[in-house]
Image 1 (cartoon, rainbow, N blue to C red):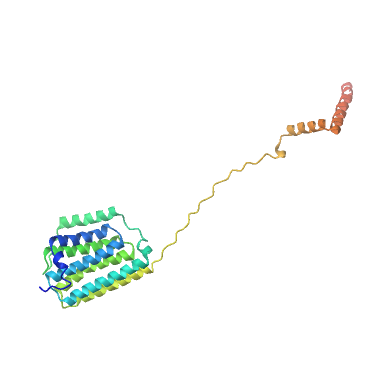
Image 2 (image 1 turned 90 degrees about the vertical axis):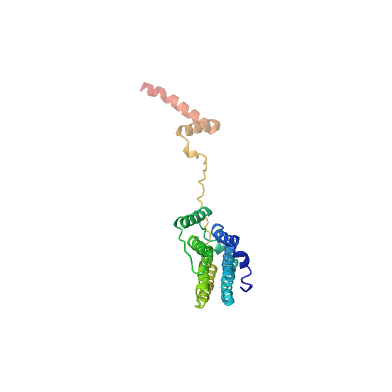
Length: 263
């Protein structure tokens, strides 16, 4: 086995702790829902799996180079889209961490109960399990995401098993190059959707004004007739003309009183 720059990291990752580390990193992409963590994590998982294959199987360096180039270009495109338009990456609120944890536990429980025991030719069982788990994590990212950026990260992780299988089982068919082109196109498309996504404006809440209570002074016309009469009598008594009229009225009433009684 010849040591190349691509297979050097695989010497550390092609062990039990290294494979477990990649599996845990792929799991954390679903739990920690942040594109700043998910995008580098997906890139490291894809490059780590390619390094493990370069160490254990020794494909042509050009094949491994095409894998690395496709993953890096797609990751850079998605990263630039998230950097230039960060509001679109956080636009849609995805499911909470409890829902994602339940989904992961369901997948693990189904895997443990069913135990498919899928083994690919020329691959070890541990390597096969890592490839399948990477694809399942990418599928969970796609199904639980609502933003184009997270969907692109999930598709980037989902195409990684296809690249891994094609590089070893079909080395001369050119399927690895086709998968790499698909990764770049997926990254370009999701980056374009992220940049062109419109941010809805916040609508202001209309609050009805509170009713105001105004107190009005009672108008003079609202007084009772008895109070009006008493006021007029007081006014007559206070003024001289009023007192003369009042006395005249009293004398008139007294003069007519006997006549009325005689009548």
